[in-house]
Length: 377
Ligand SMILES: [Zn+2]
Image (cartoon, rainbow, N blue to C red):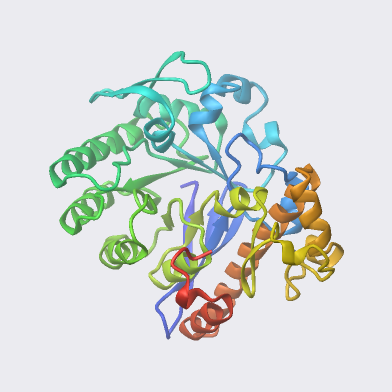
């Protein structure tokens, strides 16, 4: 099998897992955060910079690469790793989430989804078989099964029909996957905020023996406590010898709470997206660099951070660049935010090793101001 999970230890205080995910392009220490490179690039960062902050794996996007430049072009380049000059692991999502959130005039049938490209209105079609063909061409280490992510809120009956189709689609993905020796295919547990449906989805998918399992359909606008409830009753059903991936979650509080609930992998556009607007995550909490009070503040963004940005540049300078819409300003805030989350995950792994993840959570939440911050970033 292309992807294998190795459990190193469980935190005696929290139950969180310390582990390793073995892939064809290297080993990932977990729990881990995966920076998102939607268009085969993590916006404003070079692959070399991502390596200096020790990003172990990045995520890229089937839907976007299918529409532009086209997966045949990426295949002809020798696969996504060669195309974008990244030799570490890559995870590609299935395109399901983007078809449902970005494209217009979509029509869902049992066969797949007809939709119009958000770029130029062209008629396109995605199905389990097409999503596998695209991801086989991209050559990612971890591929995702094609799923439907229902909106929140959604009726029980709709979510039930949707997840049952997602399960049938997962089976078709397994059949269509042409490179199981090179690429691991993960299934996605759906079921909205309904306990019976999450359990049904998890049971059906785990009976098919995928090399890993994701929990999708969360962080779609529901309150955080609902998301944690779903994790509390879904994660225990997932097999202990496979990696578990919580999709679309990247706020510091949710990364820690997810790890406590047994999640190994996370991804989110949050740190890079807010960085480009000048919002940064620091050890003292959220810092909006545009604020006037930083105009003559020549201290680093985060005095406790050792990243390239904080070692070399001041809040006043970064504020000036962001206000002037300079690309270098976005690069500096992006570098810091990604480094901050990757450092947070290193700290989480050390806390699991030392059996003190709950203590770590409490001290982190206190200094970040998270006990009175609903947003979590
Ligand atoms: Zn920094």
